Structures are given as C-alpha cells and as structure tokens.
Amino acid sequence: MFSSNKRYKQILVDIDNYNASREIGHMGDSFNQVLPKLINRFKRGKL
Image 1 (cartoon, rainbow, N blue to C red):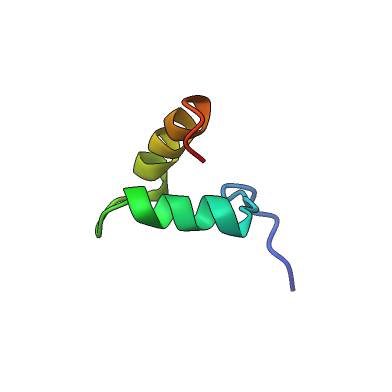
Image 2 (image 1 turned 90 degrees about the vertical axis):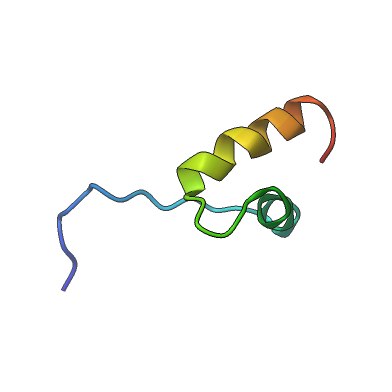
C-alpha cells in the first residue's frame, strides 16, 4: 500500500504564501527556485 520511500517531503503552504509564490515564480521554475525568493520577500516584510 504505502511505500517506505522517504525521498519526498510534503510541505504545507497557506493560501497567502501560495499566491505569493505564484506571483514571484515563472513558468518552468522549480519549487526550489521559488522558495528562496519567497523567504527573502517574507524577511523584507512584503508578505
């Protein structure tokens, strides 16, 4: 039923952060490319 493969992690994102990630991400960007931009925006108080 369930695989014991632990390579993938699940991350829960609230709707505000999801919308912000869509705003700063571009088509073809991976989550790993968008996440640092989102964190920097949060640090600057723009979320």
